[in-house]
Length: 255
Image (cartoon, rainbow, N blue to C red; front, side, top):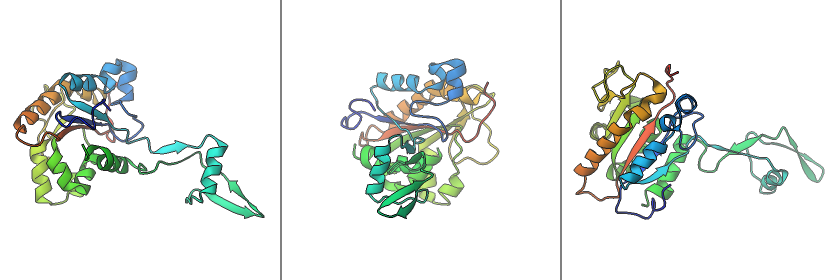
């Protein structure tokens, strides 16, 4: 996170959330990093633009959900603390415990899943100052999200509004006015993009048909969207924040 992300209440806070899968903090697409470089596959350009616009930044790491047990002392420490796990099988033998097939890693506390990670960071960091994961957060923390988040940019998101939000008219009305999605399309950047199913908020072209290049191709447009949304919300408490999310559950040809 940027130096004053949790203390500067007079600037907008940009929260970056990548897609589900192998992507780690600061990555949009590993394939784009390999074939096109960090300027296209990483979140570095987005962070640089945010800092130039005087935003503070928090980069989430929702896919890092487990910690490896590399040291015997760490493993023994778990035993002495009587931590129980469905994957941990202990057999009592005399006055000691022997371990059968020890796992290589254990779930991180309060971060077992991307959804849990997002809720934890919101509760203990962001709320005191994410597409599918953000929609889950919206349901869990309805009033806080609607009062603090002023814009959400999704990139080829695989969220399920009908399943996650149901027919909740209040939430549907909120996302209609505060969310926009950039999708891979042969159309020029920002042109309305056709959808197979009805979308609950505006959907526009990312300016590329390559899935891995969608974040870098739409970056300038996304920041214009944030700037416009921020300007429209200047009369509201400045603790609101834009959120940029990326889904990776739907893969497309992007070589």
